[in-house]
Image (cartoon, rainbow, N blue to C red; front, side, top):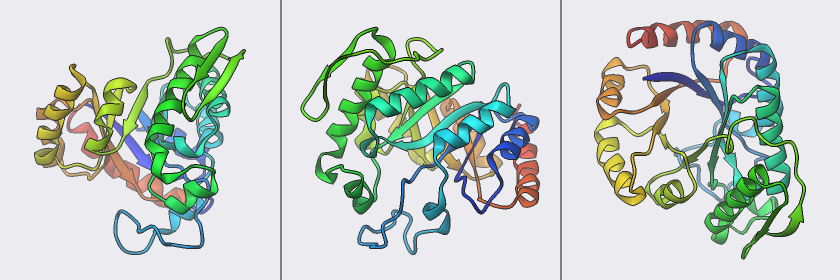
Length: 274
């Protein structure tokens, strides 16, 4: 079992560099960070967690800038988006950002992706909420082409470009692993495009049947990482029994001193399973 951390990096919490160093010092294997380009003042789309939208959603740093800083002060920590909002991102620019980060970090990128939930946000970024799933699929396929072909081209319903040169190519071959976030509605995307499923805080008793359905859909054994796991040894034992590859403890967005204390507690829990 691998242990990582999921969090929101904002302008009000610990800075990226000390966070990365603190994680590597405590032997966490990965960091997955959330993304929102902005939050519309209109709050018509309900927050999936219920109630008011937490403050950290409003203040996230750009994930690739933050992960580049973290990559510069670490040597082993895997650098992951958790998740990048693919419908809201230009695929050519995003492919270059992912490949550049993979190059400068010597191949430590995980590209965690999802379709998003905030309809006003994605509309402002030029995406139609009704087609965001198809758009995500085509953009991921286009990015895969940009990472692997010398002369890349893509012709789809929503993404279309003639042959282009796009460099750098990622260090990882054929490309950084794509971790697909979402519920069972994402299983087809995991099966056709993904390298792993990023499950969002699903308890073990619910996750087991979902993994079986995912395997049935994909026709193969798909690695599973669980996002935002509580530091509960009993739940972790449940994930181990299911063969989960990695759990991601949720780290609240806090100042540096409070973050260090919180990470110490999470590291103690993880050490009991290593």
